[in-house]
Length: 152
Image (cartoon, rainbow, N blue to C red; front, side):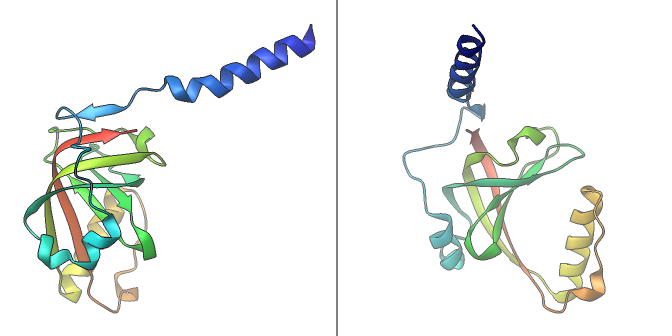
């Protein structure tokens, strides 16, 4: 009897992930024309201000309003998916899940001072500590203003 119980529980746990439904915003991302995020960043200036669909693993979500999330790209780079507050609210449960985002891709090459302010602001939003003096080089911010998002 105990073996039957454990086997049933194991079967249920194996099936449960397949029951999870994707979370969609704006009707869901356009899955027909996904661009590889590594290629997108390698040719960022070429894609600046164009509509694209990217796929990545969610590494962070705005803790205050759910107004942005970051998608992991190779070599430690990331793409920030950012909406106006309240337009879409990305859930904290998205962290670790794969997401697809369709929207306008933007590239911002910041000065060192703007880089420090930007990273300090992001750290504050997440309740993290940031030492602005530790940053020695300016950063480039890659952002996607989505019209549609699917979190798998």
